[in-house]
Image (cartoon, rainbow, N blue to C red; front, side, top):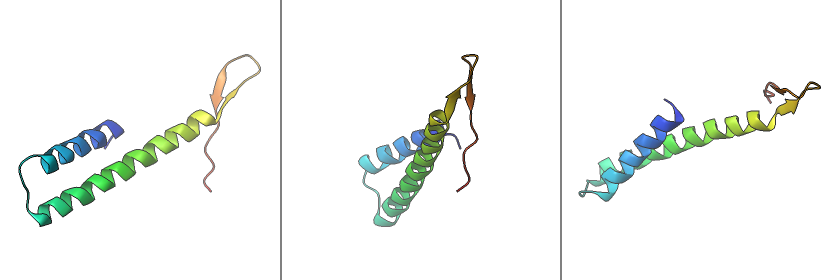
Length: 71
């Protein structure tokens, strides 16, 4: 799932929880799914941010992306 898809699903979950009343079991399941979507999206965005920070300028003025460390 892309970040955009995760955020769209999160928005749908919020709309459902703010809409008509749902029973407790469904509300908890939706909440758990929403937290998972948020964590996944945040992780993807953090990885993207790290890649952007790893950009280095080459001698000819071009930019290169250094690979992320695995630790």
